Image (cartoon, one colour):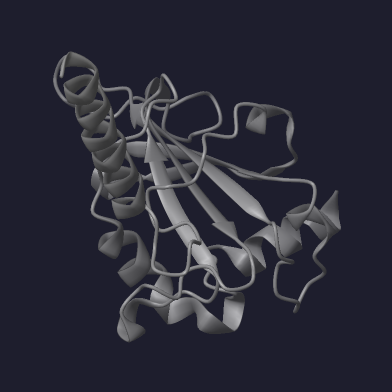
Length: 182
């Protein structure tokens, strides 16, 4: 009797685990927003753009692009398996609440607040509502420690949605212009 109880309990626990794992996968088995892994090596990647001031949100952003994405040419879509990582730093503030500037006139960085990741692969992102589809891009967010954050990814999608002609990537033209000057 005891063995039967243990087996039934184990089967129930296993079933709950399978159900929980299934709840985290899209119907297609492809990653959804919030399910991308943290790319621990991203700081070794080429920089997309750095020291992007966001005065309205009191932030400074640095964006990295994996080597696959760095192969894209102006006017092209980024290839499958492109990943971009955006570090969001709080801007330093003085005691009076003024935003501090660095010697180049840009906002001075304070602590790393969040790390956002967007990655694309054919077939990804199809679970998003039609008005929020961003091609094959999927989004995730992490704390400075690399642990996943629960974010409202509809905000990411809504912000990127108008950029279909630029593969849903902000600062697309600025990136390629800067790259041509290097």
